[in-house]
Length: 265
Length: 285
Ligand SMILES: Nc1ncnc2c1ncn2[C@@H]1O[C@H](COP(=O)(O)OP(=O)(O)OP(=O)(O)O)[C@@H](O)[C@H]1O
Ligand SMILES: [Mg+2]
View 1 (cartoon, rainbow over the protein chains, first blue to last red):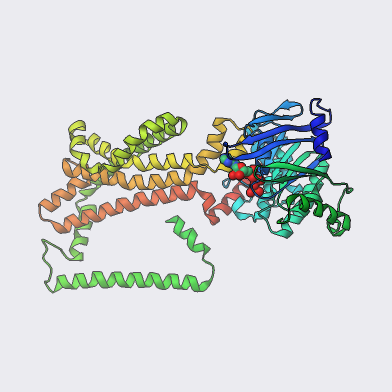
View 2: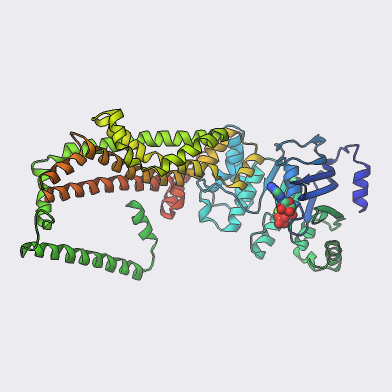
């Protein structure tokens, strides 16, 4: 609550450090469907923010607003001090499904963003190969998506996201469709990559533990209408170990999030 | 044909291959029994040659048509040319209209009632008009083939291009792809399986269109050969001609299967592995 108040108070001046800033941001798909109502927040450069909340509370809507894929109904939304009107070169998005082009090999899929920018250079190719290695897909550069497991496909999608060179990453339940083991591994890898590239990250999830474990700040949302109910700072030092989730401090934060969401979560 | 080969290579266990052979054996056995008893009926004078001649007589006619008199070659070529020309024109028109309808929603709205009206009208019934408009030569046969075959490529191209995966569309938008890139890199390749399925139906349709137009009036073509033989009550000759048409149909079908196998490689595991190796070998950086 304190953070919301502060965000509203200082909203007129764009602080140099702030990358994403929303002010009473509202999105209504129709009069009765208000997907997001009066959301205000600030996200600092290099921060990892988790968006958590039950289905239908407007998490994807918020992400798509920031991505410039849909238009807001009212309020303000700026990225690097500029009103968001269309997709930006410095934001990249990743979805629950990998959405790979079936007729392209892994490396050709990763090269897609470079192709869309113009001619593919040797440097682009070297970077693509490097990203595939980074996500653990060395030796799978020339396989087609159908020959890869779901987890491996999502790794290709992650490499493709990195290839865009975006420093604002918008991730909509990127590992939500994967089994728990794979998801945990990918989360750890994601943390490592994100801190290496110092990107600003907005990560949507249903899972409270995951949200806290990954983030510097958790934005808790509630449905009907979609509202940003509370912003909770996560103080744990990095790098974090999986065992962090067993500590009482961690579970206190889990309880705090649960409290906002009500008993049913 | 080739696709069948690749499918059977996926069947791993030996027992399955075994049943495959057994099944093939059974097919051959049934075929022999049917043809054999038909032939026997002929031997015992149970068949009227004016209605149903024995298989051996049909085979004799077939060999005669193709290799002794060789009368069928020219007719076969003419019909094949008409059908193929009709196919290419039909595909060209069908795909152009579909692309125009995808680009312009207004065009789509105004063309769709005509497209539906056209589709529910039996194309074959238009033959007399087509002959009146295009004359008795090849052009009326080509026009007829075009008419019968243009719809499947039209509707399949339209459907394929319109129903691009929504998430993929969003991904392309988020990567700021322009219209051209969106079309060539996402829309068209995603629609390819459906488009080729449209081609397959169209090619069969083109053959039907050409032959029916020949029935009406023609001096050359396999349809008119069929009519001449049957007017002469040469039923064995008619059936031999009919078999030759099946042969043409089979030829067309195989060409389409090869096209499908080559283009839509990402739906076939064996082919995909092959391409994967090729791309790896061709990689330069
Ligand atoms: N394009 C749209 N048209 C109309 N209503 C929409 C549209 N997209 C989302 N909504 C509505 O907006 C609300 C919020 O949707 P949103 O997808 O943002 O939820 P979410 O928090 O991402 O849910 P989930 O966790 O299930 O993905 C829902 O009630 C949804 O039905
Ligand atoms: Mg969602």
